[in-house]
Image 1 (cartoon, rainbow, N blue to C red):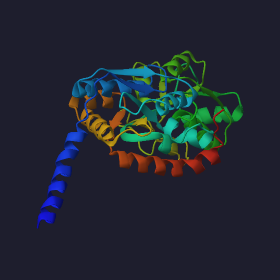
Image 2 (cartoon, rainbow, N blue to C red; image 1 turned 45 degrees about the vertical axis):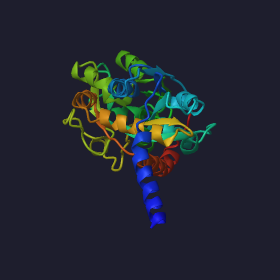
Image 3 (cartoon, rainbow, N blue to C red; image 1 turned 180 degrees about the vertical axis):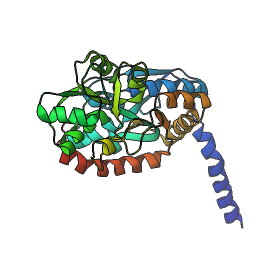
Length: 322
């Protein structure tokens, strides 16, 4: 009986102790690294969510842009950061899935980083400047076929949804265009608006205000379904007769390797609570960003599944880190 009581007592203590441990409270400002320049979809998402997380944690959160190498500079900085919760990263499909497939990295995403939780799914649009002659995607494809290797498309960085979307369009439509990578969505939009690059698959967060103002023309949505933001814009698959064409985009929060579970649990809880805030949800949705919270384990499984899904697609499309 005494043994039973001791076991029950230990179990009760463990159950009571876990919530206490889960209430990790930072004592210093937190940095959240973004692997792209200010003004892009990742930057907008991180700053929107971080403002609410800061209020919930009661500590300043500084969003730090580390653009370069398709998000890999931010990833490497996070890998080498102390595992105390003061340095986190908003990863992307580029940094967490595409880059590890397309290039040899100095780290392993699931070994050298700690999964915390997904943040958003991202709406993208294929856009051109209104001065360009193409009013539909078939017209753009026809022009690319007539002038192989002359038309260019910009992306917010190597390995991102914009890069893969253009490479996949080349492969499936039988065209040859030039990829021009930028260090973030903000810089990309400047050159799309000026006509320096011919088209782009870019986040709604960066292009929607320009579409609504008539400064950009949306030709298609690179997803499986039309977007409620612009329901009259067709998908690439339907308008260009390319069944199966789809490029997803999403962001997720990560930490350095060895991040203690109480910190992971606390940050995950605050991240998810932030994405339930009505003001945050409204701000995100206005930029074409759909909250998609998860547990750390769900994010790990999601990254594994996304890698298995995209590896053969990337190899067929011939997309590289160049």
